[in-house]
View 1 (cartoon, helix red, strand yellow):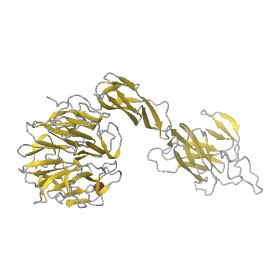
View 2 (cartoon, helix red, strand yellow; view 1 turned 60 degrees about the vertical axis):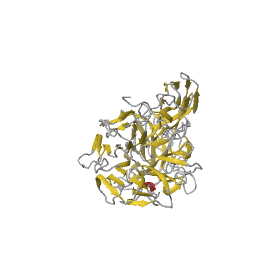
View 3 (spheres, helix red, strand yellow; view 1 turned 180 degrees about the vertical axis):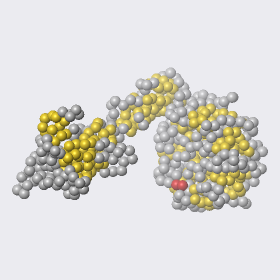
View 4 (cartoon, one colour; view 1 turned 45 degrees about the vertical axis):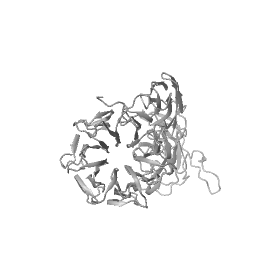
Length: 621
């Protein structure tokens, strides 16, 4: 602490949510510094401000470099207190800043009565410029990690504030080499990692955690050495703090050679998927709401292997939604399971808000197709009539009335539909005349009607003279195949999922850039995949989970080829993953596997497949 050699006045130092320090003020007299025990040290002379006199000569020492002293010169402003504070809104601590960041400091200069004194010159100082510098306006900049005192001197009185300068966090990790090819199982290779902070400076003492995003492919130790366990393509990842980098590794070839599970049909949901195999329905992935239909719920870990749906029912097709699933029996009866708080199970009973096993959809309808969305379900019966049920608060059911529907409601009676798809809170239907009508909430232009962020409660044709042969939707993003084989997309496009080379949402249908002729399109939350007439699979959009199937974790605003050249006859996308079936029924999936939605036998936060990988056989097979 500081003690004046004559009676001084205290200096109150303030910082919003920050450190408060008290310093004794001495005017222009000498003062002595006490240690923490109150022992006086040697006298320290006070600095003059170096105020220029009328003849041009400075008064006292020059205040130029560090700005020490009293800018007021011989003028007695009657300063009693200098309050120093951070002049900014601070969600956390105002007195903390990273290296390279700035803090705006300001003062209140007060007299002995607590009244503010205007016009008093203020000189700023940093006690340690190696930790922080401060300019003449009070703008402090962190230069090194540590705690540093910043001083404001006005009228011979010094106020201080203590700043904590934090190391710049690691924001980028680089893994080298970026790609490795190994020729045999058992081969090893070593990767190295480098960490960089927010200033893009190398952090030499950074530590890393190493992961293989596909445990079937290989393992990696703490030094970054990868050991191949099977054929295929995978990602080796190094993480430091909240940042991570990755490298691609291929063992022998891009596609694993193990036998793939076979399905007759699959459907991707938010974080789970379902399929039908010889009449038995299976689901895998996230099961918190009972959407796997296996009689259990509440798990956040997910199941990485296809599990039979209970109930002994025979199904011809299934549909996976956000948190529920539905299926159709050979006679056209519909059953649903999982979350049902908005009526999306269609069981007719508002008191039953969910089910861990299939329960019948009421109404006696014979359905040919079902689509499960966020909080709504729709189905087309064998005569082409469209019915929807569930939560209509965002208009997604299409009745024009804001309420929950616990049983199927007829939509545009008398109109025949060829296809229906459901987004998070929107729905689109493909009519017999190949016109697409959409309804619900027009977030990001999801309805293709021009404009965005408004509710359209009744089916309305998308803008333009488009004629589609098929459509698909997920979240707030919809695509359709025109009769000429081209693809148009509308709605969300923040990751390039529209495939038109931009990152801007589309309020009306826009062409996906490609000269190919397409026969199928499927959409995820942030990506799109499509099959060409020649049997090629192309994807566009977000690939940070590997859902583009290129073997990399990259974005693309134009279509890129899925590696491996597998001739899929059907592809289905979930939120951040994609699955494809061969003519034999062999099913491969790629993308996010954090909840086991790939059916590859594993689930976990760091798990994914960047290239098509065979599903493991279902449980109980």
